[in-house]
Length: 137
Image (cartoon, rainbow, N blue to C red; front, side):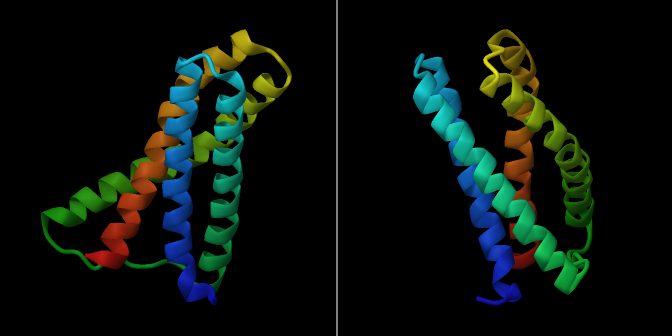
């Protein structure tokens, strides 16, 4: 594997994160705290692996220009800008949410998780959309 394989790894990690987020959500809705915790820790690990791979790739390649033209270009940059802003915001949100959960402060955890989960899900999903628009279209 070399750095040219990293975008495919990155989208795979984004999809894994999204799947773990959905699994964690479903488990907590069923009252399965242990399973919820396992899914959410997996989501944290896959996000951390993504972030590491993403940084390594962009240190090697730099910025990847979007080649689309016309209205799709506006769509791409709208998704990209919202993705970047929320990707920056999600890091401290995840860390605080995780800290509350692991520390047993479940009232605080639930309060912030209501914001963290949908933002994290959006960032994971739009990461996959951005990959498709950059590399598959």
